[in-house]
Image 1 (tube, rainbow, N blue to C red):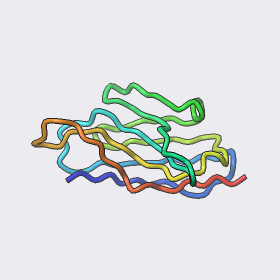
Image 2 (image 1 turned 90 degrees about the vertical axis):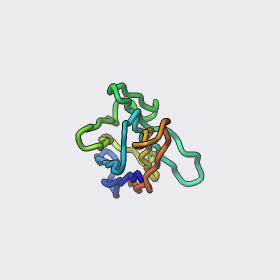
Image 3 (image 1 turned 180 degrees about the horizontal axis):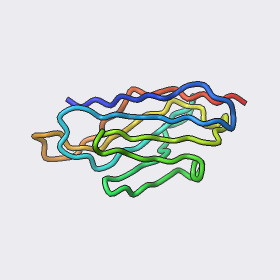
Image 4 (image 1 turned 60 degrees about the vertical axis):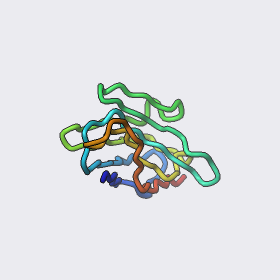
Length: 121
């Protein structure tokens, strides 16, 4: 069984910073990609940033230059460093992993429970 545990959310003033972490645990054979999504009230969930097994990163236009996604393969952990936060960054942030469990022949998507980020003006 695979679990994703997120941490690091909270309340911060505009212009401040937060660092989110997501640790993946369980019977993992390989991880293809890890992503951060967010969902604000009344809006659809959107991709914020992604990182592949080869460390190729991708960012939403709205966060490019402010957010940085990194990972530590030894710890099966992905991070999202968020700087210059804006009120419009307020959302629940979800970690997503595309991985293959031991004994399976294909990748599956796994989601964390979400962590709230609130940016006050």
